[in-house]
Length: 586
Image 1 (cartoon, rainbow, N blue to C red):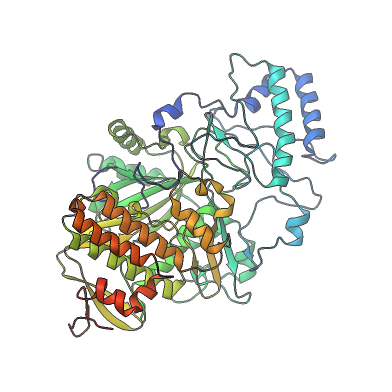
Image 2 (tube, one colour):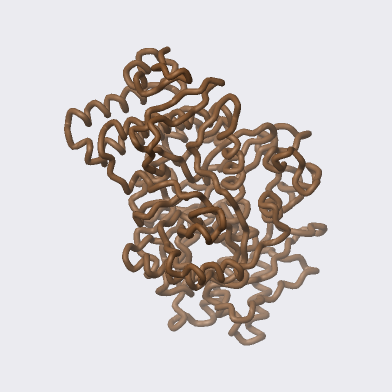
């Protein structure tokens, strides 16, 4: 992780969040054809054998009806067969006009509709999002193992048999709703399935409205529900279609000596941008590649994780949009959440200047992500989050004193209490890599709690919270969250234990609001600071801070620590002033 200021959901290589390989991306370039070679080489069979193979595959997988011919494999000009496919996908059910999955507003029960139950989505051997049971990087045993096929040693008959076997296993995987995705012989994680639950069937959620309250595009609720995830994403970002990379490329070339890679996330790359680049001041860009449709994936090449889909991108965009409103709320307000100034969907080949920046950075400190040069293609989609510069993540700075550490924790606690009150928010990924620290000359940071202004002593540090990919919120008409049940790798023993603590609290019901999950993350934050920061080399100071951790952990939620007189007097008193400049008492 670079020491450059950054304001995105980046992760340090030491972060406990799953989603990356410990190896560098250079190793991922070794054999890009390993996973997808079966379908590529099957096209080289003699015509009769290929026709027989297709008939056998149809019988085994029941993929197409008698009336439908299996669609031919198509490839865009110049596209490497080892990294991309653009096969047409059809459904076997008569009358089914499209197999594109839409992000429907679900009922609270999460029960499948009649259409969903009777019309299974069909696909021709492509990965289906969240039907993949992923083990962590340890390579633990799995239900299905996929053998890497060496082009030099594999015969055509063996490849044909492999293709038939894949189709049969794919049908079983759909029934089990899980499947193992293996790339380069290593297990890779799948992001949790995104969900939007409708809590008021007669009301359009606020994130589909503009600042004046008008519905985006003038659409009805039914029309919005009928949109694909990609169409909903474009609607929220106020775009009719994905923008071209061309204009961005010229900007990067103009500022080639000032644009640098400064970090990365589990699914994207982070670059800085000089003030004149975006015309909105010095900025940070988080660029995330994604698939418009998870059921019809275009990219099948090497990648350090299963590439996100439009459906999985939506929650972070929606939650960021709602958190931006918290800063000016009349009852509960904070500026402690980093929200994007701009969100845009673009399409095309990755700018060469950014690829060069990525390569230079990875040569110094490998990040574990796959190089953008590997998945760069004219058909590839990306979402770009543009942020203000908000500091460096807590995992990569050294605090000078216990006062700074205490000020950080108190500000983060108050920020989460505000978010709980406004949006019933659970961050669900609040490790030290998702807290940015910047220096400030202001002695106090302003918050508003239950209509009352309060001011927290900063001791020269200002924390801000980032990365809402896994978060949960409730708005006026909906609940937005990610279902961790579809990503069991989060609960492996070698992953941050707070994920398992969350599952214990909510018993696997990820749509339900549980304040205690935020408390678990704050308790882990206090412990991590005490263990990693050199200012706690003094055993007495460390013991004092760990007392804070021990007592904090006994509460059921963060707000309870605020309302408890004994805890308040021991840990908050003297750090907080009221609007009339008096030390706050309870």
